[in-house]
Length: 126
Image (cartoon, rainbow, N blue to C red; front, side):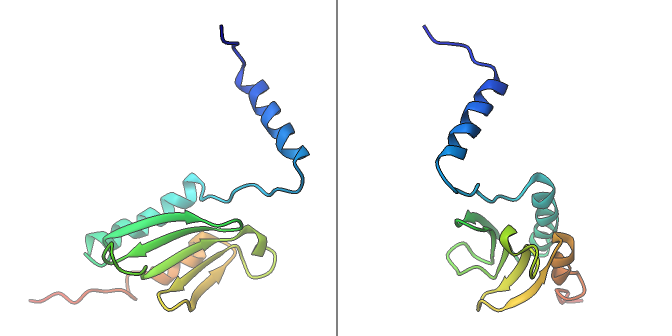
Protein backbone atom coordinates (compact mmCIF):
# COMPACT_ATOMS: atom_id res chain seq x y z
CA UNK A 1 0.00 0.00 0.00
CA UNK A 2 1.27 3.52 -0.68
CA UNK A 3 1.62 6.25 1.88
CA UNK A 4 -0.18 9.59 1.53
CA UNK A 5 2.11 12.58 2.10
CA UNK A 6 1.00 16.21 2.13
CA UNK A 7 2.69 18.59 -0.28
CA UNK A 8 4.13 20.64 2.56
CA UNK A 9 5.90 17.63 4.06
CA UNK A 10 7.16 16.51 0.66
CA UNK A 11 8.55 19.98 -0.14
CA UNK A 12 10.38 20.19 3.20
CA UNK A 13 11.88 16.74 2.70
CA UNK A 14 13.12 17.63 -0.80
CA UNK A 15 14.59 20.99 0.21
CA UNK A 16 16.35 19.48 3.25
CA UNK A 17 17.90 16.81 1.04
CA UNK A 18 19.19 19.41 -1.41
CA UNK A 19 20.75 21.56 1.31
CA UNK A 20 22.81 18.61 2.56
CA UNK A 21 24.19 17.79 -0.88
CA UNK A 22 26.56 20.78 -0.86
CA UNK A 23 26.54 24.09 -2.66
CA UNK A 24 24.37 23.02 -5.57
CA UNK A 25 22.66 26.06 -7.07
CA UNK A 26 18.99 25.93 -8.09
CA UNK A 27 18.08 25.85 -11.77
CA UNK A 28 17.37 29.16 -13.47
CA UNK A 29 14.08 29.59 -15.32
CA UNK A 30 11.91 32.41 -16.63
CA UNK A 31 8.96 32.98 -14.32
CA UNK A 32 5.42 33.42 -15.65
CA UNK A 33 5.56 37.22 -15.80
CA UNK A 34 8.91 37.23 -17.63
CA UNK A 35 7.73 34.63 -20.11
CA UNK A 36 4.57 36.64 -20.71
CA UNK A 37 6.62 39.75 -21.54
CA UNK A 38 8.84 37.81 -23.93
CA UNK A 39 5.91 36.08 -25.64
CA UNK A 40 4.16 39.44 -26.14
CA UNK A 41 7.11 40.69 -28.16
CA UNK A 42 7.44 37.32 -29.90
CA UNK A 43 3.75 37.31 -30.87
CA UNK A 44 4.00 40.80 -32.34
CA UNK A 45 6.96 39.78 -34.49
CA UNK A 46 5.31 36.52 -35.58
CA UNK A 47 2.30 38.54 -36.73
CA UNK A 48 4.68 40.58 -38.91
CA UNK A 49 6.19 37.30 -40.25
CA UNK A 50 9.65 38.27 -38.97
CA UNK A 51 10.04 35.39 -36.52
CA UNK A 52 8.68 31.88 -36.86
CA UNK A 53 10.01 29.69 -34.06
CA UNK A 54 11.53 29.77 -30.59
CA UNK A 55 13.28 27.49 -28.13
CA UNK A 56 13.90 27.67 -24.41
CA UNK A 57 17.04 26.21 -22.94
CA UNK A 58 19.16 26.37 -19.84
CA UNK A 59 22.73 26.13 -18.68
CA UNK A 60 23.98 25.80 -15.12
CA UNK A 61 23.80 29.54 -14.54
CA UNK A 62 21.39 30.90 -17.17
CA UNK A 63 18.08 30.44 -18.95
CA UNK A 64 17.90 31.24 -22.66
CA UNK A 65 14.99 32.12 -24.94
CA UNK A 66 16.20 31.73 -28.54
CA UNK A 67 14.30 33.26 -31.47
CA UNK A 68 14.50 31.83 -34.99
CA UNK A 69 13.44 33.01 -38.44
CA UNK A 70 13.37 29.39 -39.60
CA UNK A 71 13.62 26.31 -37.43
CA UNK A 72 16.76 25.02 -39.18
CA UNK A 73 18.66 28.32 -38.86
CA UNK A 74 20.79 29.62 -36.06
CA UNK A 75 18.85 31.82 -33.63
CA UNK A 76 18.45 35.45 -34.68
CA UNK A 77 18.39 36.60 -31.07
CA UNK A 78 18.92 35.06 -27.64
CA UNK A 79 17.39 36.50 -24.49
CA UNK A 80 19.44 35.50 -21.44
CA UNK A 81 18.55 35.50 -17.77
CA UNK A 82 21.66 35.18 -15.59
CA UNK A 83 20.90 35.95 -11.92
CA UNK A 84 24.57 35.78 -10.94
CA UNK A 85 25.17 38.99 -12.96
CA UNK A 86 22.26 40.89 -11.37
CA UNK A 87 24.45 43.02 -9.09
CA UNK A 88 27.07 43.76 -11.76
CA UNK A 89 25.69 44.25 -15.27
CA UNK A 90 22.10 43.20 -14.87
CA UNK A 91 20.50 39.77 -14.98
CA UNK A 92 19.00 40.12 -18.48
CA UNK A 93 20.63 40.51 -21.88
CA UNK A 94 19.80 40.22 -25.57
CA UNK A 95 22.42 38.80 -27.91
CA UNK A 96 22.43 39.01 -31.71
CA UNK A 97 23.11 36.09 -34.04
CA UNK A 98 26.83 36.90 -34.11
CA UNK A 99 27.04 36.87 -30.28
CA UNK A 100 27.18 40.64 -29.84
CA UNK A 101 25.33 41.99 -26.80
CA UNK A 102 22.58 44.33 -28.05
CA UNK A 103 21.16 45.30 -24.67
CA UNK A 104 21.84 44.44 -21.05
CA UNK A 105 19.88 45.53 -18.01
CA UNK A 106 18.48 44.84 -14.58
CA UNK A 107 14.86 44.41 -15.72
CA UNK A 108 13.46 42.38 -18.58
CA UNK A 109 11.18 45.22 -19.74
CA UNK A 110 14.21 47.47 -20.13
CA UNK A 111 16.05 44.86 -22.20
CA UNK A 112 13.07 44.06 -24.42
CA UNK A 113 12.96 47.69 -25.58
CA UNK A 114 15.56 46.68 -28.14
CA UNK A 115 12.65 45.07 -30.05
CA UNK A 116 10.49 48.19 -30.14
CA UNK A 117 8.25 48.50 -33.17
CA UNK A 118 10.07 51.44 -34.73
CA UNK A 119 13.36 49.53 -34.92
CA UNK A 120 11.84 46.52 -36.66
CA UNK A 121 9.29 48.03 -39.01
CA UNK A 122 8.41 46.03 -42.06
CA UNK A 123 8.07 47.71 -45.41
CA UNK A 124 4.53 47.36 -46.79
CA UNK A 125 4.01 47.47 -50.52
CA UNK A 126 1.21 49.76 -51.63
